[in-house]
Amino acid sequence: MLLAGYFFATATPLLAQGIPQGSPSTPTSTSAIGDAAGLAREANVWLAQLIRIDTTNPPGNEAAAAKYVAGILEKEGITPEILEVMPGRSAVVARLRSSAISDPSRALLLVAHMDVVGVDRTRWSVEPFGAVIKDGYIYGRGALDDKSMLAANMAVIIGLKRANARLNRDVIFLATDDEEGGGDASIKTLIAKNWDKFAAGFAINEGGEVVMKGGKVQYIAVQASEKVSVSVAMVAKGPAGHASMPTKENAVVHLAAAVAKIGNYAAPVHFTAIVRRYFEGLAAISDDEIAKWMRSLDTADRGEHAQRVLSEANPQWGSMLRDSIAPTMLTAGVRPNVIPGEARAILNIRLLPGDTINVLLGELGKLVNDPQVRLEVQPNAGLAAPPSSLESEFYAAITKVATQEFAGAPVLPYQSPWATDSAQLRLHNVQAYGLWPFPITEEDLKRMHGDDERLPIASFNKGVDLLARIVSEFAVAR
Ligand SMILES: [Zn+2]
Image (cartoon, rainbow, N blue to C red; front, side, top):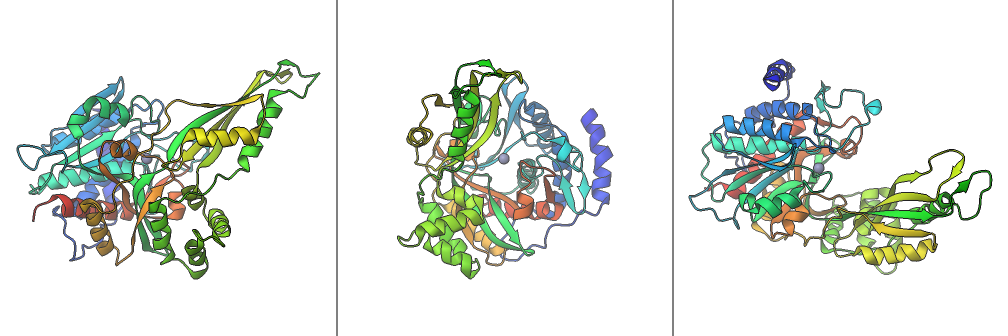
């Protein structure tokens, strides 16, 4: 009832604010969804409502979002199923069938997560869970990550259902929980308990982007692989005592020295096939100076310098080339006048697929070289997955549609520094690709997990259309 009241209170202002229509369709690719612009306008309201349901993880409370999503799908005659993973934490699955007997190996999975990361309210200029519309943007935690994709996936499955589209493979909708935590309520558990409900050969998820620069789409990065997140506690121990009589064994001092050494360390560069292809493609559309270094990355004489130049130019490029280590948390001490017996730091490590944590920890141990300091791998480490194929029919469909939609802008395979649910899917033989379909500038993208997260409403509408075209190209019979 409360939700229904919300809906009417907000729906009118949203529509009255002249939300831009989706771009006019180009004649080349086709969408099985008739009125994509009208559907995108409806999806604006779903996005706003989803932002207003606070799913900050922890604790997540995705059950409330799951109920909302399932309610919308149900009204359309799609039969959703809410899968409770833990009390208060649920996923939603729904399926459009292509035939009486499903062939999971052909099925296409549309994935998005419902949880969001926390906010520092003091740094936001608007209410983070208000879905405020300002200057053509929708603001709110989840506007980028990942409630926009969730609303777009809803629009696509609803559009296909309304159009009564003739499918050549099942299309499955999956809204996950605990993606940001990757813990016991995450897709790992869903796969272990409910795989038969969403088993698929192909998936589209967050993870790659349509990158805008100077008002036009520069390239489309399709995530086919991802780095692996592992958190490590670095623990220094020493004698506790009175702060009036310090010793050289102070745990805080030893921890600080170890953190400083790790902060200045760069792991060796390893190239994966996807990263090689990414930089080759990016060089072709970059200005001469930066392109020169992209082309020199893997050369014997200039490689090392090129790696340094590019890592400094863009931290994301640096992270694509090597295992990265970011100290993120520090804890020590209980009183100003007590030397603590222990000091801890958390290091968030992102391994290249193929690299192993023990090898890196061996290197870090040698670097720190301090018997008072030890390294402990923390729970919920990610798992390395094989990359998705760049030769699959789904990758070809994404490439075809995206290239047509954005006037020949290249599609580049992408290995994201961040982790997504796709790794778990790839471990189950799913050809999973990351493409968050909304055209976006690097500047706006930086607000993901940051302050004043926002998405241009015109980009959202365009993304709904793009996703509908990609799914139509791949899953609708002609
Ligand atoms: Zn996300």
